Image (cartoon, rainbow, N blue to C red):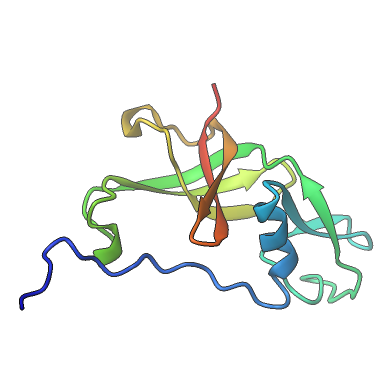
Length: 140
């Protein structure tokens, strides 16, 4: 009774919190909603209770297109953890939305040799195990 050699631990998935739930609900609809503070005229991400800097209690959820630029990236040629053994190279990235905030993500449908900081990218909604993840690909 040996272990099955191809059995890998499942990939960890994000767990929505009461504060972040509207973000995940929007992704499930293949939309991106982040917070906006009217008093400071600033978009806010990651989800929080009070606006950063001003601590204003005026955060509203508003939809954005998700369009942005590649702020930075790394090509992980080795698995970052056991669940990703078969997912190399893994293209880890930070995308800067046109509205200003940045989001940590993963690039898909991309040739690592073609990636350039500053290139335009577009959102890809990946439905996995009951949650929708936001990934990005180069915009043609």
